[in-house]
Length: 198
Image (cartoon, rainbow, N blue to C red):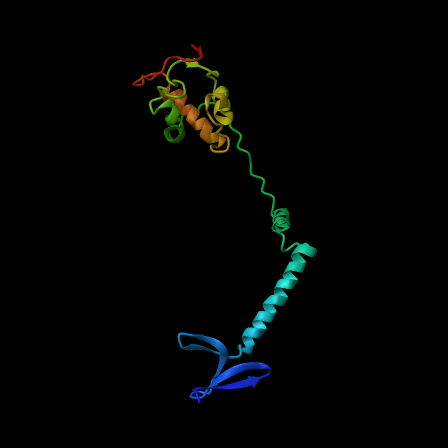
């Protein structure tokens, strides 16, 4: 007699270890290791059944009834409709140079971060034109510069900054150009471009 006995239970043949009296699956043996034939815990079986039922309900609601709470696009539209409307006041700026120190310093900071890449820190010009002389390609009025910064000059490679700089920031950097860069002598000034404005 071996250490296992063969039994037929509920139509399925299995073995019972005679030493421990535990049930083994017949034929499931590898390198002398045999697999136990335990029943799955009832909680695990019920959890499995619940996940199947949940999946079926979810799929029917999603693909058949197109439930609002399961379609992200509908959820986004519903939340946007429910969001309070925010009316931000539009800052009205007069197109005049800002001469106070704070505005000039802010304009210089913007110039250094954004404009100096193409115009150089001293305004002498590199890819962009020289900003220290009296030659202007698109005019030298505050409105002209404001329009260039706002809408850019795509054909020259300058992007619009209307989404990156507020109107005040644009006016500040224009003030820095007109009040602090104009008339200075850069180290390597680029040749004049545009029309001469006296």
